[in-house]
Length: 362
Ligand code: NAD
Image 1 (tube, helix red, strand yellow):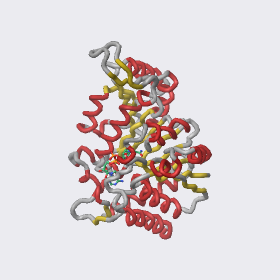
Image 2 (cartoon, helix red, strand yellow):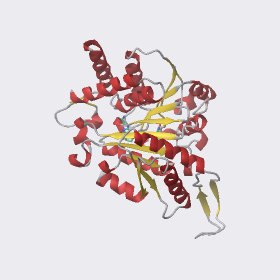
Image 3 (cartoon, helix red, strand yellow):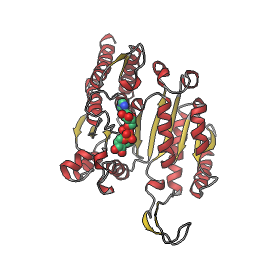
Image 4 (cartoon, helix red, strand yellow):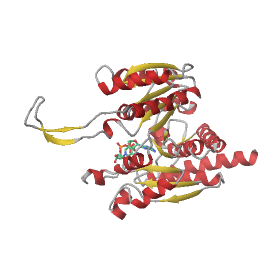
């Protein structure tokens, strides 16, 4: 088994180092090889996703990714910006299914901006289609308008599109995932306005007939955004397109208290995957040693479960994270009165210690 380790920019290097430390202590047989990506790769090779990094990612069973980006690259041409590396990896590895669990840990109930009774015990899974929709649809660009409200004016445009197989395969991923949970899927669309999402809804309904044991409902994206803060526990598996999923998964992230707690997995049809925290490179706190590494450590657990077939090792990491939170250690983003504030490295060390202790005591 081989893992490509791509720390990236900003806090990426700090948090990935902690996840690697945790993987090392598990003493599993796999090879890890690091490469530059994002702004760091642009500085060294003139491109955010150099050929050598892409080759490493392709020949690995899984990619452990930190984060990319910094405001200083905002003036670069779009294809050279650090964020293009993620899009390039998704496209080249065919990572069409993005899993973002939003779990509220018992110990962090007070870190959420919602009332504890709304959030306690929350465990939802957002499945976002990742390689289609308006983010990849062609044509796109700038031109002079020939019609619309201001003919002759400069305008920009993108294309929203989904093909039948794209919707069918993500729908199947969602129904299969629901079968392992509480057997409920909510498909989020904007079928009342967008043809693309009426098509989406029709196909999800069709695929749903193959899963009579799973309850399917449909919700417009504006209502879903509202229900997520009003009654989040009503959801179980949520499946949606690339753009709606981008927004809703960040909203769900905040329900749990901090974006620093949320892992993610992006998989292709052969279970090769890219695992990364749901947050970005946080340039505002980079280099200060205060970033929360738990989202990345939990992403490594998802990697062990989904791509490397090591579910027990994944359980050990997740249980160690719960133990560490129960012991009262908190990075600044989840700190509250009565808990102990620690830095990135101390948090990683505490997870390692919790795993080691369990190993020793059996
Ligand atoms: P961000 O997620 O980096 O940060 C948002 C806020 O959350 C900041 O205040 C940050 O300090 C905080 N935060 C994020 N992760 C944290 C952690 N682990 N611990 C504690 N606090 C944390 O989003 P942003 O500020 O909008 O973007 C910063 C850069 O990251 C941009 O260049 C953006 O394009 C890029 N970005 C990259 C990815 C990715 O690599 N997948 C995703 C989103 C944004």
